[in-house]
Image (tube, rainbow, N blue to C red; front, side, top):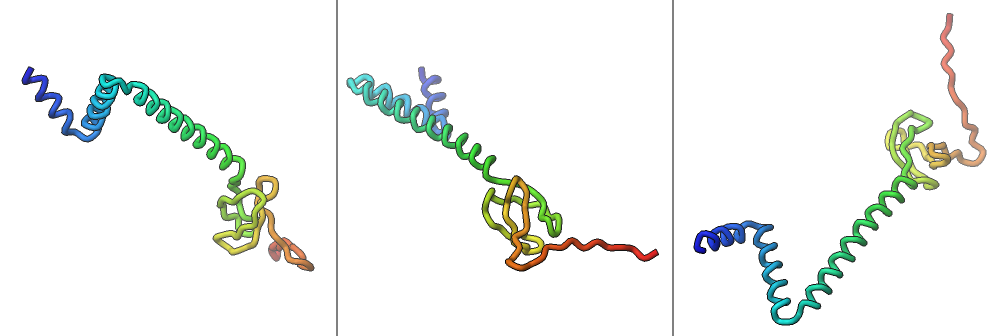
Length: 123
């Protein structure tokens, strides 16, 4: 008997084991004094809370996958992430961009002409 008690005490002194033993003893105490319904209520609240946390995690990750786009800047080809439909600035060349169709597009000011420069080598 003394040997079993010493093992329980040594397990009780560890972090998680001690907390678990205290919770089990508290549950047994509540059940013996007729408050088992309180223990069941606490377990239901714990289960609902954990379920809501897991569901909210999956919803948040689904939302992020829909809203975040990783693409290259059309001006400097630097790859970074942005939100769909939002204006952003390239962290490399500071070009103003917007995400449309899963890619970054330049925001041109009124009257500006967007040109592409082609380098022609002299022969």
